[in-house]
Length: 121
Image 1 (cartoon, helix red, strand yellow):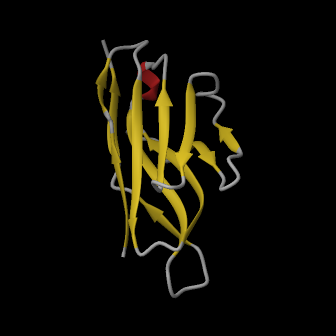
Image 2: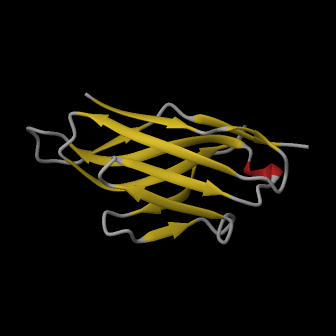
């Protein structure tokens, strides 16, 4: 099966930085788009940043200029560098990827387990 595992979350003060990582493993033939989502208490899950297989990126307006998404295709990993963190960035962050498995022809949507990011003084 396919697994996505996030790491790098934690507690940080406003203005601080964190780098989230997501490693994909398992029966993977190809990875198309990857992204980071977040969900704060009482709010819907929202797209934070995405990156295509061609390295085209998109960001939510709330994080533009502060967050950077990148990927390492050889390692099957995607990263989210978060700078100038604000309390409103506090949420559970989820890694997402469109993946085609060996022996199949269609992409499937996979999610990581989530990692908590808390920005507080």
